[in-house]
Length: 250
Image (cartoon, rainbow, N blue to C red; front, side, top):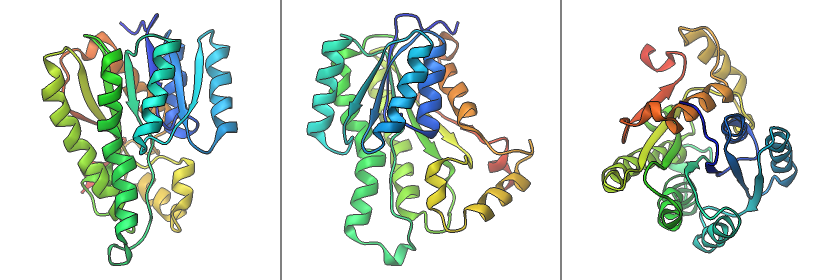
């Protein structure tokens, strides 16, 4: 049920953290992988090394997913090298951590373009390489439904991302393509290092999580693997939360 032999997967923002964990997990079960990155080439190479150690092929493609031209060129490379795309994981994310009243139009557009609109561009450009049975997964966060200090642009863009997933699920359902969201709880990745109150966030999250520990990138990758398997064939347009129960604490 978890056999991904012959499958080709694209993971945006795949150089570190959750993206890297998903790339490695899918490769462990047979998928060849495209790791997209923008700035962290060394980290992307490390991800590729891990994938290739598993005997799988890994393409590294530098592309800004908020730039339509970059995305088009990326899919030209994927089409040339692989000829197909079975799994699309929209994981790349960015945003400015500021109070809402300090945000500018540029801050807003930056987060929306990378965190939400990019999925639409990826799907539009990637769909010609996808067939019935393909999977599209967006990675979101609890900030889409919770007010988190200084998280306004990211939270709003993640809420837009989740709405977009639902609309895509309806439109692509007739093509036999599954579209879903993974919403991750507090995960100690490099992205969290940008929060001035990082230690406080992690401590509070651990204390409030019924299972008693933080969510790891590997936990998120396990859900991605499930959503890529035949076991998830009738899951469509849904948000699967992986947070150890943190969100149910109010």
